[in-house]
Length: 302
Image (cartoon, rainbow, N blue to C red):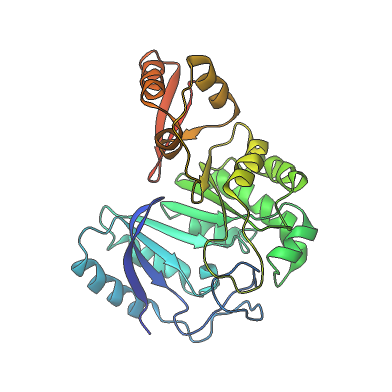
C-alpha cells in the first residue's frame, strides 16, 4: 500500500501531499464515534510501520511529480504520533521540503509527553483535536485507550503553545446529542483560552462515520461558536443557502466584538454595500485582516 497520497486541495491549508504512517491498517489510541475509518479496538502501537527511508523515498518521488504541492501532511490510518521514528522522520522531511510547510494531523493524545511536544515543535503547522473538555464527553465520544488523560492533554496543549512558534490549530468535531451542548462548549471555551491556538476549526460529520451518529446543523454550529467569544473560530461546514444581507458599520463592529469573521463568512453573508463598509473600516484602521493557514480572518484592531 502506498505511503503517500494526493496531493489533495485543502481549503484550510492549500494543496496537500499526505504521508500515511500506518498504511497497512488502522492504528489509533482512540476509537472516535465519528471516525471515517472502520471501528477498531484502540491501540498504542503501529504494527509494521514503514521505515524512515521508505517514507522519504516515496515523498521525494511524489514531490518531484507534483511541483505545486504547498503542504506536506503527516497523518495515518489512526494517530501519527504513535509512529516510533517520528523525530527522525520530521528531521529528514525538513531537509527535502523546500519552501513547503510541514503539517501534522493529530488527536492530541500524546501531547502530554514532553518528548512529543519537542518533536512537534519542529513543524510549521500542528493541528490537534479537542472535541470535549469534560471527561464524560471525552470517554463517550472519542473512546480513548486512556479515558483519564483529558486534563493532562489539555495541560499538554497549553505547555506546547508556550514552546511552539508555528501555527497551532485546534479542531472540534461536533456530534449530535454528545458534545453539542452549551455546557460542553462553555468548558471548551475555558480550555481554549488557556491554550491560545492560532485558529479553531469547528465542524461536524460530513463523511460516513464508523458508528451510527449524526451531524448537527450549520445553525447549531454557529450558536455553539458564540461560546468561544474572542477566539479565532472558523466554522468548517456546508452553509445553508441564504440571501446576502446588509450590515451597517455598527453591525459589523458588533459582530467582530463577539468573534472574528472569515472571508467565507463575508462572501456568503455580506451584500455589496456591506463589503464596501468592511473595506472602509479596514482603511480607517478599525479592523485588521490576517491569514492563518489558508483562512482569512477579519478582527477588531487591538
